[in-house]
Image (cartoon, rainbow, N blue to C red; front, side, top):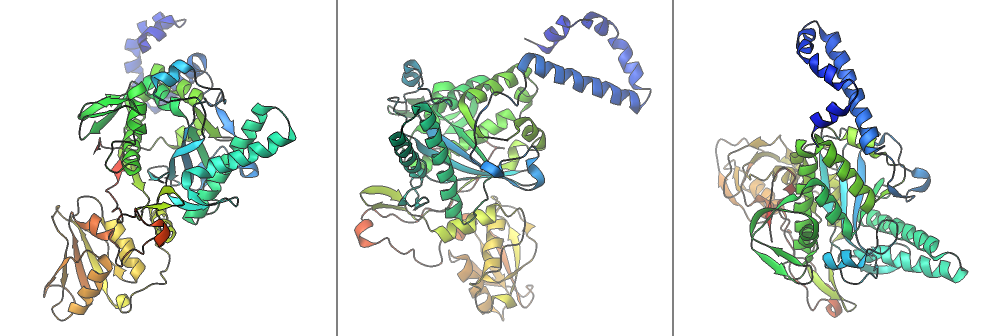
Length: 510
């Protein structure tokens, strides 16, 4: 139904329309009249939402995950850090099994509710709310699980605590539905604690959002689909995906299949993470567009879909949050994945090896909001006498990562200067200071070309970053230590960091 249709139904609408010609004349009489009209417009919009949509703050399923440290109404006193979890559950957000016909339609298998958290994304939003960084954590990352459960895959942190709590409470007797809720709460808390310990930032996460299998179906149907792009046509039975190559809009069943497919992809879960990031970037772009924000019907459908399929941490005022995020645009949302060290088989399970120190450094870099990096304890001898002049011709914004890397080694850095995109990275140095160039090259890795240049000041090295900079800066400067012999039979090389996906584009993925 159009906005004009709603106006026509309101009392006095015809009279207001008749007086419309006079409004333009009145506008010329001064700013006070304009402000008055703006106030009336806001009142009308508020009335519309409450009459036709209802209070957007009510009706959400919540979880008391943060206890006494519960989120307050105005969360942007400082940065906000949200853990977004995709639960591979065959139940809805009230714990009831999804209908058989829905499971069949979603190719989701049996309604067993195995509680695997197959998607874990940390979303960091600085205090000003003008941009966001989303960091994905692969489900198979081999980490220490809090709660005394030992080292396992990251996606088991929830289920270990859930099962332990459920069995303990069940032995004492009581209502099974209440026991299930308490076990879920324990699982959520353990997952948050495990992630915070893994990244070395206790207490960082202050918001929690959990989606289930039906979420992608419900949300994409509400907003009319999300634009994605596939490098090749894809058909696979387990996920139910059946999509052509190229850019296209997905919703409902195929949206879920797009983000769930794991088998048949060259990089397995890492490719699935790229799919999830591409989908979420498209979802953010769509939700932030006038097509949704300026359409009260779609907005109402979206809110209804979220209420049916999402669990939020208690105390999170979504209306307040939406107002604080009003300056966010699609291009200001960037997606990353933590660095990984390759596959391995440990204790009979296929896992993904991770270096906790590297993950901590990367998360710190991505969430620093422009703050200088902490002082390094691994400065290269002589680096503090060298100033690096950075020129970014990478075309991918690799300057920030390179700056962090070199500052961490003890070099002084000048502000980066933008260049036209170039193919390869080159170092230029004063002819008498080849040793300084060698020190910078050693720190960058990848063995970039170095050239003497009399125009370079003594004590300085120019680094002209090319398109190869992303791969070079992610290449370790020392060999990666192999996993123990008993568990390294399927170890693979380190996976280089891919360029980040942003919500301002439609990236093509496997």
